[in-house]
Length: 392
Image (cartoon, rainbow, N blue to C red; front, top):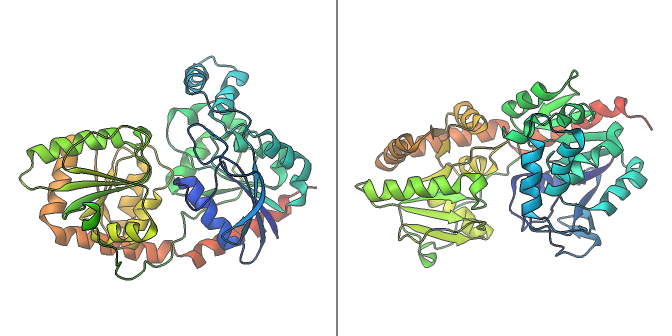
C-alpha cells in the first residue's frame, strides 16, 4: 500500500508529541508499506523558519518530501486571530484565519496534495490545528485518515470543525477521552476509528550515563519535554519552588527539554535543555517520579515512556486525558492545585516503595496496550477497513 503521512514538522531531533507519533508510526509502517512523509522545512513551531532543505530525502528508512514555508508566523496576528475566531458571532472566514495564522503556510505542500494526492492509497494527517492538515485534508478527503491529537482547549469549540471532522474516512485516536471529545463535535455518525495511543519498545537495560556530571542529584523530580507555558511549566515551577521552600526534605526539579520560556534561577531547579537518548534513559531510570503538569493533552507520550521504565508519575488532574491515563493504568497520582501537588509529591518522596509500585503497574499497562506489534496491527486493520470507502 502506498501511504502518505502529513505533519507540520518531522525529524528525530524534533521535540513534540504529534511529530514523534507521526515519525514512529511512519517508520513502523514503512516495514511493509511504501511510506512518504509530506512535511515542511521548519524545525521551530513558533516561527516556522525554513531550516532544513526542501525536496526529497530519507530519514529513518522513510522517504521524506519537505516543502518551504512561505512566511514566518506573526505571534501578534496569531493572537488577534484567536480572539476574533473565538467570538460567538465569528464568521467561517474569521475562524479559518486562525488556522492560517497558526501555520505553517506551505502552499507547495497543498499543491502536491491537490496534484498527487490520488497517487497515495491512504493519506494520514497529524494534528487538526495546523494549517497543512486543516486545509490539506479536504483536498484528499476520500482517502484521508485523521490523527487529530485533540486537546480540550477553546479551539475545539470553533464551528468550522463540525464540518471538518465529517470529512475523513477514518480516525486514529490516542485516548478514549480524545475520541469522545471529537464525537461531541462531529455532526454525522463517525467514520471508522481506532484508539491506539503510541507504540513503545521495551526499555533498554541499566543506562551507563552518569548524571552527576550534569549537576543532577538524587532525589529528583523529572519533567521531560518542551519547557513551555502551554505545557503547564509556569505553574509547575511556581508549585515546585513553593514546595521546595516549605518542605522538610531537599529535592531537585530536573527539566529535560528545549525551553520556550524563561526559567527562574533557583538552586533546586536544573534546566538541562534538549538531552540525548542515553541521558533521557538515565533520567527515567533514576528519577523519584515523573511530573506531567499540562492542562491540555491528547496523549502523554512521556508518561508512557516513564511507565515503560517502571517509573511512577504525578500528573495534572485537571486534564481529563492525563487523569484517564493515570486511572486506567493505576500508575500515577494526580493533583488539581498546589495543596494536592505538595501532598502527592511529599507522599511519593517519603514512600519510594509506593512510587516503585506505581511504576510496576505502569509497566504492566504498557506491556498490555502499547507494544508496537499490537499498535501497528490495529493501524493496518483500519487501513484495510476504510479501503472500501475510497473513491477515485
